[in-house]
Image 1 (cartoon, rainbow, N blue to C red):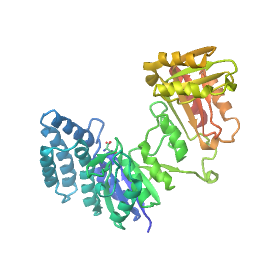
Image 2: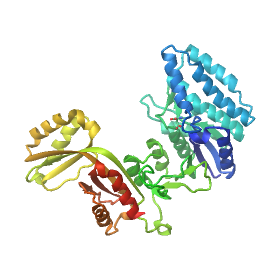
Image 3: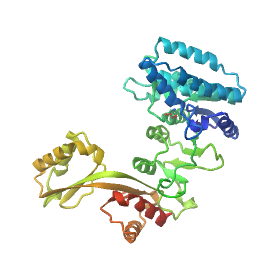
Image 4: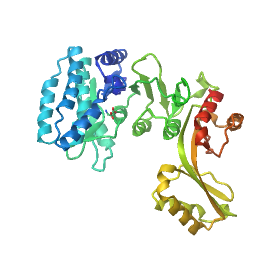
Length: 439
Ligand code: ASP
């Protein structure tokens, strides 16, 4: 039997009118049998997320301040949805039991998890699906990692062929305590459920029509990405394009399950399809060989120069040991015959910059070390760039024509991306130039 796993984010669960949209989406396709939900999110930009209110409740309790006002807001939101949709869910009873537990002492994770729990109870009632608690199957190990094998087996057993709604964001520790993922973690629950049940697709329903080709704060109305591979997505999200929880990719990717990002408010829009690979021959946008552009500001570049360094055995190791001793990592490392540059986040390196420089002097005895900061890294990412001639030429020509000085270049041999470093002051302009030249 065909199966699609759907996850609805906070804004899709924010009020009764959003529930109606969710129901229409679920009912439009009989294979949409497993639904994972977030806690109610913001209804507008000045509103509160239920998850934030629950954290706030816990903070009040810790300092012995009454959380009645905040608790009432949480109650009102869920009772409001229940009443508007004329559902039967006993929110009063649930809230009363929760208050009693809070008085006896409740962990932060358990209290905060109630946001998704109430959402799932209500959505199950509204869809006529069974409620399936994540604590019955999503199993953490004590070290905080998910025991995938045990969780998958437990979910297959618990879900059977039923139509179910599952609360996202939490699971259970081996000792039975509720454990949360980090923020945005309902994406991971959905991905695990899709992988466990060998879904045909994992649909992640949110409030944007997929991943955009560039940051909309920099480029006006950027186009959305129709198809992107997991590898490309990793490159883009690393440099700041954020749509999904980082850890949500792995479970579906392992099983080669496509991940489709969709917009609850525009359900007919195809959104972005993320897969391991595509037959790009049938892609209507064949000629668009840039999939997306992302970037981040504020990097420091240390360049170590020494005559004959490329043939000095152990040079890389000595340099990397210094970095490792300072508990840092290098983002990119362009190199030449006589020099190696290390690109490191300025925020991370600032407290130990002089110590690093001192040690590099000592172990490398270089001819010269230079440090430049205020560097931005931009990546033009695209699987279709491979073996295409002239792409980097065009990038540099366009940046040059627009008066942008390229301070650094790197490209891996797999040609998935071209990375350029520019001064922070040129960052936004460089993103726009790249976007306008290629899209
Ligand atoms: N409700 C949680 C959060 O706001 C988890 C989620 O929505 O994915 O982070």
